[in-house]
Amino acid sequence: MTSLKKNIASLAGDAEFGVGADQVRLAAAETKLGIIIPSGLRDFLKEADGVRADHGAGVIWPIARIVSENLAFRSDSDFRELYMPFDDLLFFADDGGGDQFAFAIHADGRIHKNDIFRWEHESDGRVWFAAGLSDYAARRLSESYYK
Image (cartoon, rainbow, N blue to C red; front, side, top):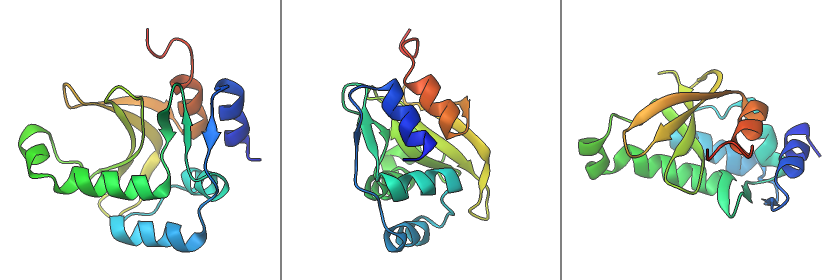
């Protein structure tokens, strides 16, 4: 068990992990999205294809949802009128209340650092949230997150 999976399991007693995604599915997702999945997220998805916790929220989405959500956000005509473009974000999680979490993407498809941002759906705010997945898990699953 990776340290990220152990960390999430220790922070969320209700964590439900998916069965790991294979290399073929991960490569297909990268092709569909035109990005390179960050190594930490890739490693986690190989071990556990997503995790639900915190009363059923998608703490880390399965690869199929990562693809479908990102394609939907990038192509929805209503979103184009309401929000700034989403092409520079790789969404991978939500908080169960409408806000989502994402890595920033360079124009060449590489992830910018390992910083994670929270997209606030009501204001279209893109706010720095964490320095990598371990920090994200600790902050996201802390009791103070909703305060």
